[in-house]
Length: 342
Ligand code: WQD
Image 1 (cartoon, rainbow, N blue to C red):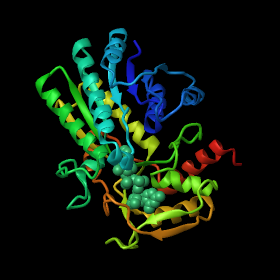
Image 2: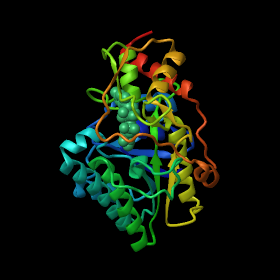
Image 3: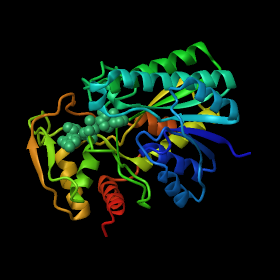
């Protein structure tokens, strides 16, 4: 019997790549998304890659009645991967109530549905942002979390606590929080990828749009940090490697291999790259010259972070495999397909 997985936010960037990996691992997938930050044609492209169009329902999971109705009609769900959330760091500072309501209430409605309809397994999309600026690098899963730099980051931290406390109170639940570092790149088919609405906040989509001529110049936010070239360092992980880790996490829960009701894993590569190394790495990987300038630091940015991946490697038997240049090239191939550039 094919197991059915609910992927919330499944038409989004990481969600769509995870739907493809789940289907290719033999699972049937139902996607719930409110399409506030993605579009329906992602389902066409998923179908083109995997040969199977996932089931789809459009509604916002912060709506308790619609979420309960969905679960009442989908009691055969074996596990849930919860991506759906508002995720723009800067926007969250401007409209915090929207972020707290949308991100926290959605998770609570899902947990209500799990308890009511006996769905035990949940994988939660968390973020390295919960660590703030770590005192010691690389970051392990026991590195203390710090006050978030933004309401967005705080919703990730609070949602981890909601999940952990719910699992403690209701032992029929079990869950895994996956703390992503910086997801970048696109599926090798170039049929799915990152397509931010408006001006991209994140570095790599801004770079690919600049390379495509949509953006005049790349601003490098600061080169006076305490790093080798002065620009900030992050752990950039290929989105397909990240998607594969979700299949591993789901199977860990379905096969009862989890060693505790609530588990946390860092999903990074273990390598830190600076902004300038990403800029030059993109030029090397694609042959496209980038126009960039050094400007002031961006408020809320941390200086450097990268993961200690040993726990995820050992416990999950998962490791990020794709290198930086291959990943940056995949992002460029996606951008070229979206913009009709040969
Ligand atoms: C990376 C580096 C910028 C844009 C955020 C969230 C995290 C996750 C990923 C959702 C920083 C610099 C950026 C630009 C630049 N999001 N930069 N010029 O801030 O590390 O992480 O996005 O899950 O949770 O916190 O990612 O790509 O915005 O920035 O110099 O035009 O690139 O200052 O040093 P970030 P980012």
